[in-house]
Image (cartoon, rainbow, N blue to C red):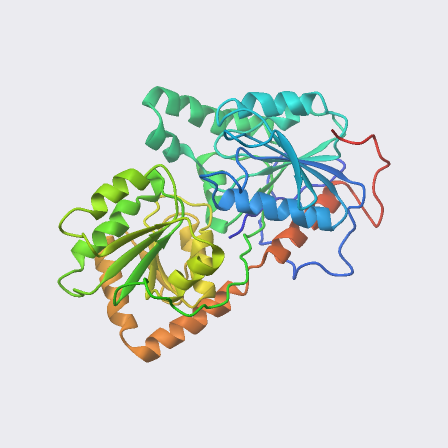
Length: 420
């Protein structure tokens, strides 16, 4: 998956967007890539990949961090702390600092940054609905890049009371719009960029830096990937992913495909309700909750699927869409921001548009994929599409943005002391 956007002069950040934003893609690290040797970077994100409900945003942040380390940067990853996790550790060359739960992190990380405000050359402030307000606490000479995967306004209303949701929307919109108006902003897709401008009236310039995707190699389907055809859901089990709609397909399509099975790969707070739903008579025996799987086992389940289905109501991009595509598996998804970018309708999958139901579009997709030639053509298109997105490209694009922001031309600013 991928995140993307921004364009401002390093000497004085632009306060209004350019006339046209364009995707900023490079071919990945090369000998000509700017060196970040000695550059001190703080990346602020409310979770990290080792945590239980980590998703695509955390994978993006971590991949960027490790790439910057490879370019010579000193990277500190400040995030929340789950029970049992160490407060600090060094992993893959990245200094990880954990503090506070999912709420306190938004207080403790800015305080941590404030006490080190002159020790970093650049801060990547990942805004997952609520920002860390880095521009308020760092020194003037410290650059800030804002990283936003998608607009969260509807997500606030899905998880919080109406009063709390309004506060969240006010912080995400008018407050963040002003605080970050002079900061280079990165997002992951064209539709996410459009929503930033239209729904948040974002003032800062936006650059699109798409998600990457690991190289996925097909693995022989093992026993236990039951069903014919097989539908798979891959991702976090959280409310706004609406996984229950995918599970219900086992009942909705039973008349057309009595042998259809649904495999759900992932973990999260919705696992309990989903387990209860999977035991109901209309789907019992045909829905398989696989939990968290190793990379090899995950790819085995994906490789055995006819179709990947996501019912999410909002995404920045859709990392799992590209993971499935890398294995030649097309996706059915709703026509919402982010997913309409990662799914090429009619080429690498199908979009559920206004007036259509998920079951109707999945039924159409499965009927088309019954034709071996159609299935082979779509599988080839999926694999070709997935090859467009690599973490090397993502990291290289972020490296170029940082080099531009710091006005680096083969050298770096003099050291201002090691970050702690």
